[in-house]
Amino acid sequence: MRHFIYSVLIIILSLNAAAQKNVSNNNQIKIDRKAVVERHKIITTSTNPKSPAQVGNGEFAFGVDITGLQSFVPFNTLSHWSWHSFPVPDGLRPEDFKGDTLDTHGRGIRYEIPNKEQPELSSWLEGNPHRFNLGRIGFLLLKSDGTRANIKDLNDTRQEVDMWNGIIYSSFTFEGHSVKVKTSCHPSSDIIGVSVESDLIKMGQLMVFLDFPYADSKVFADYIGNYHQYSAHSTKVYLQSDNSAQINRKMDDTEYYVHVNWTNNARFLSGAAIGFFQCRSIIHSISCHANDVSKLLQNIHNMKLVFRKYLGKTISIFN
Image (cartoon, rainbow, N blue to C red; front, side, top):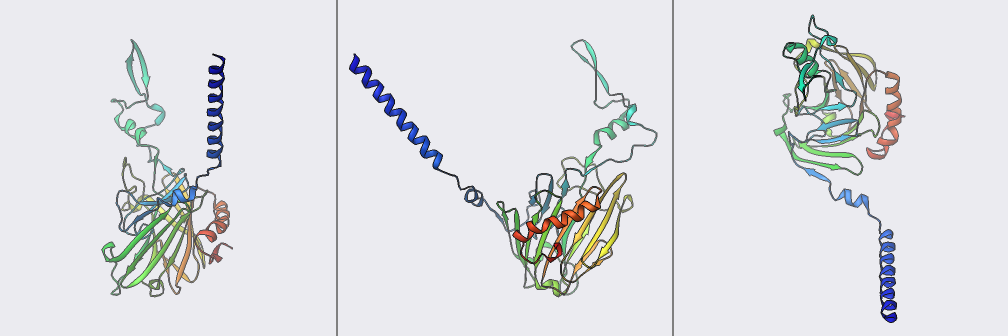
């Protein structure tokens, strides 16, 4: 019996030692996280209108089509602070809302749900505040005859989402000329950086446009914003230099600012369009902020370390 107990103890100790060795070996095995992530790069050759490639930082998001911007599909630009409310209907006050009383286990309990006796106020409270689209940024591509191109005019389209570095690489050809685009987002601010290389810039056939919509009341929509209700909001360029412009946006009681920077020679045209000429490459940034313009300038300065690493070395604009 004693020999049997000794044998059992030896077996248990041996198993324990083997288990400890396995644990030790497992602790020495490290996951190559970069390799795992890079195995899942997203590569596409066309725009999915329901599922765009996107850069962001958890509090800001910018969706793009196959061109690396929002050139042909009005994808959204959203931030955690981009909330808007439509004006309260005339003669109504939110504080007058009564809610509805329902019988709950024999007691009348007031709930903050639509009241049939206050349909207009109920509808307003249900839909406000709501998120709004900060704006659209895209390429304006012109054919050699001066007419505007559409997405079917692009050839050799390819887009790769590098999730490890947070960069979208897009490329295509247009009328025999290649266009290469890099799109990235600042890790902690509402700023995107874009690098563009193409002979079409020098030829005056590739420009960048900005378009700002009014808010809408759509629910679970793919594209947010009303781009045709011009009189309901305003866009004003209030500060401009040779390589930057600051834009004030106002919708009802909501106000925010857009700061645009670009390198090389360029012209900022009326109608909220930015035309880039006389250069082979563009590196520019576009940032949005709720109200503090001085913070915008600081954010632009802080971007140089991020975009110098990811978008190239010619970032003199941020120095």
